[in-house]
Image 1 (cartoon, one colour):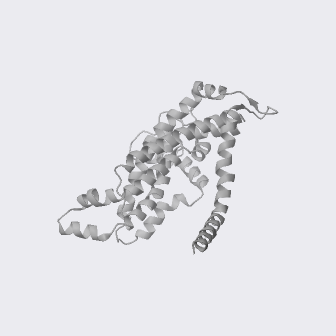
Image 2 (cartoon, rainbow, N blue to C red; image 1 turned 60 degrees about the horizontal axis):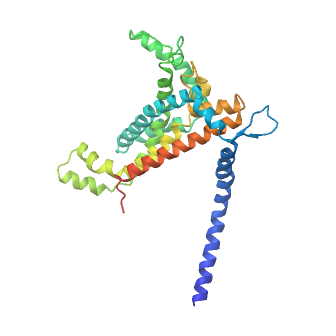
Length: 298
């Protein structure tokens, strides 16, 4: 009997690993191997003009910490994240709360808000380029009609980063809404019925029921928002190319330009490793902090 049980466990184990094998192979090829390759390359001098990679120890990391362009991109990324992460989460939660009600046309409104996430972003960025253009932009034309001064939104170092932030928030709010809608629909309606019987108003219901029970969703969306916000490349490449005066250059675009613009693969790998270490550290810290105040339903 014991031998039969042991054979069954062996068969189940083999079956489980067989089912996991495709995913593990995929992760090994497209996650673990690139990570190890990038980490190793960060200790080498490797350029397009270099016949072979030359080991130079930690020289790349020393250069990275002394690079004013990289420091500026880190500063821009921090400002960008400080603006877009809370704004996209708050708007996503607001849209989810509004569209979770049984109101006419809510399906159409959900589709409209989520639409930027399923359409070609290059086309949308070109539309935003015309909207924000200094001479022919519709936003400046509206400002003229109401008597406000016009502005070169993408050509001014003081406003370009915030213009990119507005575009990003417009795109990400619908994405965050999707997760919050899922979280709202998993909350038992009996909680709200009991709160109504106790005389609670809408704000009290949100503060005492909705928000605490959405904390697991919030932990996930914050993690996702941090990961997405530091990887912004396409909008910068299309709209500003990091200008003017590096005012819109962020870390991932700086890495992209270092790799495919200057073809300095060793330094690009170094910056990538530094970015990964910082992002993983921040995500672990925020998960540890939020997890302590998160309520998980059984």
